[in-house]
Amino acid sequence: MVDRPMVCLRLIACAFIGFLSLAGAGLEERTLAMQTNEDTISATGGDIRITPIVHASVQVEHAGKVIHIDPWSKGDYSKAKPADLILVTDIHGDHLDPAAIAKIRKPGTLIVAPAAVAAKLDGTTVLANGERKEVAGILIEAVPMYNLQRGPAAGQLYHTKGRGNGYILTLGGKRLYFSGDTECVPELKNLKNIDVAFMTMNLPYTMPPVEAAECVKAFKPKIVYPYHFRESKLEEFTSALKGQPIEVRIRNWYPAQASGGR
Image (cartoon, rainbow, N blue to C red; front, side, top):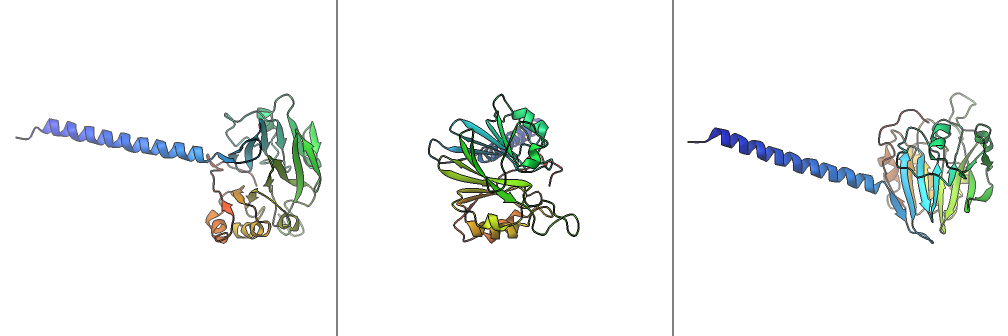
């Protein structure tokens, strides 16, 4: 005679063990995903550590210095480190966010931005397109970022030439480029010796993935991170770069699907 209560108990126990196994696997996968969202790049004086935060916001660390690019309150800054240097690319709210800056600012934090941003943010060191300067012991180059054709109406552009900056940072002999909001402008195509590039793609404000890929082919960074991409189809970007000697790194820039921004 079958002991039905015992069979039921065994079935429940097996199901529970199975659930724990799946839950554990899921936790392991999530933990792995979080770990791989932080990268290290070998450089003189120690590794460069890159932590994507959200959209166009990223934390970069090297040789004891912490750099934040375009901090935005839509990101989780609970584990972010206080900044030695903050770079702001443009005046739009997903790039210039005084509340986010306040979260990571400490006594002695230096801020670099174009004049249009400095007019809205006290204590800013101004860097214009094409200028280069050492700030906080880090060489910074300001690269033009602008639209060639896309804008809110005929004869208007979302980003006018000269208002915003992309940036090149030299850290431990490596050159890291952050595009900011731009189309594939000539100054971008003519970049040289870029080790790591962070490339925007987000219509209608910047450019589509295929156009961004063609731009990347022109200046040939060793590593490229798509960022500031929203709902863009990243597979179009990666597909367009197949066969190129360029490592494409896809990371989670939208952990909570932040809303707003360009």
